[in-house]
Image: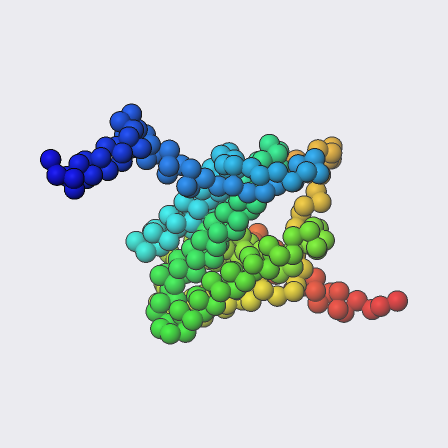
Length: 285
């Protein structure tokens, strides 16, 4: 054997010894590497101390994922012409979006990851989904004006969510600054749910949806205040008539869900401008 051959064999043996015969690159090793490289690590403050926390909380993020799925389902249903299913999916996303934050607070599982994930889910469920459902139902018949108004709504929803994220902790929790995106989405979804069974070729419906979608978008980025209901204490006792009113409300909604939800969220959307005008008109002492 020549010197060059002996040197090459020695190099190969040294390389094999370095890796070791007992360290094969199997599926388990690849899975371990994948999990390590995709692990979520964030800094949090607990008991006044800054700590690094690995992983995410499963329970609240399951609700957020379910809300995201509902928003995506609404888009698919709207594309397929199933507008009732699309509207219902948006309302289901609203319920799930309201639960994820409450579950996180009840179980003390709040996290920065959860807050960012919730915002992205809201963008799909309350930004993209309502605009696309309204567009596929009637706004596409208007041509360029229809998709411009639909995009205006999407852009306003994105701006609304971004502004809300940076204003957390700096504004009065009793009020929302601008129309909340779930309420704007509910108004659009309720209109689609209620009116899609009518003659969608009528000019009046097209103009109505142009106004509703455009107004909802502008109200989201306005400085008009909306009551947040966050100061309500559900742990305190209330008069019996309050419970009776809640029961009657559920009965009325169950009789004609689309119409009652439209009236409910239409009144909430209108409450902001009405109260703003009343405050302006109120004489100062």
